[in-house]
Image (cartoon, rainbow, N blue to C red; front, side, top):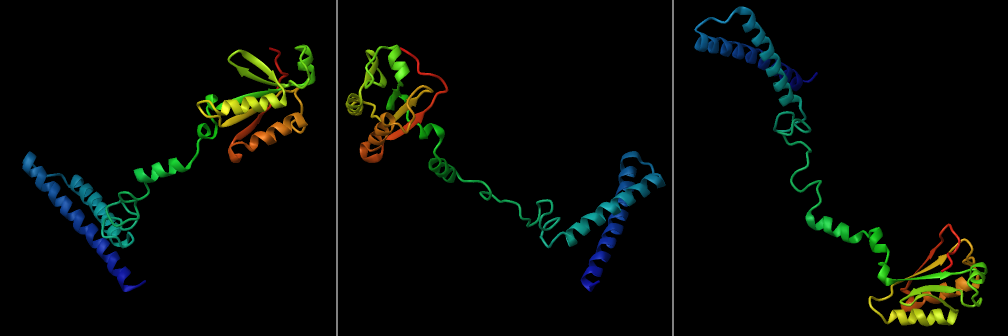
Length: 217
C-alpha cells in the first residue's frame, strides 16, 4: 500500500469523523433554537453516525473517483470531468442529419410515380384465344380509349409516343401473369432489352409477376 493511498484513507476517516461530529452539533443547535430543549442522546448519536458515513463516502468519492475535479471524478455523477457527451457531441447537427437523409434513398424515391410509369401486360396464347385476338398482338396497355392490344412494333411506337408527353416516362413495368410467356421467351426478352436501352440506358424496366392468370378485358 503506497503512502498516497494511506493518506487518502486517513482523509476519508477524518472526513467522516469531522462530518459526524459537525452534523451532530448542528442538530443540537437547531433543536435548541426551535424547541429550546436539549436534543436526546440517541437522535444525536444517529445523526453523527449517518453524517459520518455520508461525509466519509463523499470524501472517498472525491479522492478515489478517478482523478476528475468534481465529485466522482471521471464517470462519476457528471459534476467532474467525466466522459459524458458535451453539447453537440453524440448528437448529429441539423446539417449532418439533412445530409444523411439526402444520401439515403427511400423506397418511395426508388419507385417512379404511377404517372411516370407505363404498365405493359404480356399475354399468353390462352388469354388471347379467349379474346379472339391475333397472336402477335400480345402486349396490352391502358389508354384513354381503354385497353389496347399491340404488336411488338406497335408497342415500341406507343412507348416512344409516351416519351413525348408529360410527365416524362421514367419506368416501364412488364407484367407477367401465371399464364403469360416466361421472361426468357423472345416476346418478353426482346421488349425488355429494347426498353432498357431507351434514354441512353436510363429507362428503368421492372418485371411484375402476379400470382394469378391474366384477366380478360
